[in-house]
Length: 257
Image (cartoon, rainbow, N blue to C red):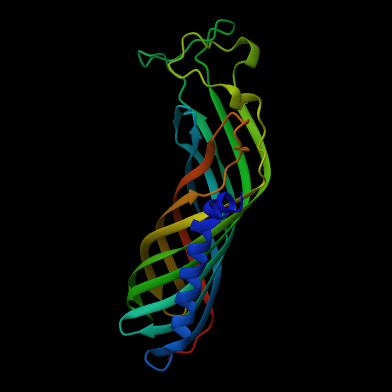
């Protein structure tokens, strides 16, 4: 049992170790690189394209939702040409899944009661907190930088809602290519989400105005939204998200002239 618990949390513990080593390395190498103590604050907004990694599989298209909130960045060092920072966000994010209900011939499944193509979409809202190591190359004061960032991310469940045009008891299960439908009656069981986030992007800085960042990011959830013991229906039900985000940061403290 102890080994099973450790195996589940091992990827997250590994990410913590990598982030801790990175932070310690920055501090210990301060004499080698150029020290910085720059703090920026701002906000971000964009779109989250999400699927749930169900096992057994549920056919889906990308669920599209809003993601945005506060952004913070602390630049601690420029090591040779690499600008080293720590990035954190507190975001409101809409995740979930949008089902692709088709026949084996890839035609829409028609509900026998309503006569309409069946649709089902579940939206799950979270407060998400990513904590990422941020490495950039390019112009520090005014101009363009390219960056990569990665680290752990945590989420707290807020609410969920369903958009559908059929009743569970009248669903057309016979014509579906994918007949899994237990999820329709199952609310989210696990309220705490965690995983690994990583992305890359471009930043454009304007002196005395601020920093504009455009980023593509991927999040892989290590937790599940449903219980996954041997007696539960789903063995896996984790979030898998692609974010496209625009961030604006303005400087609070600046150590480089």
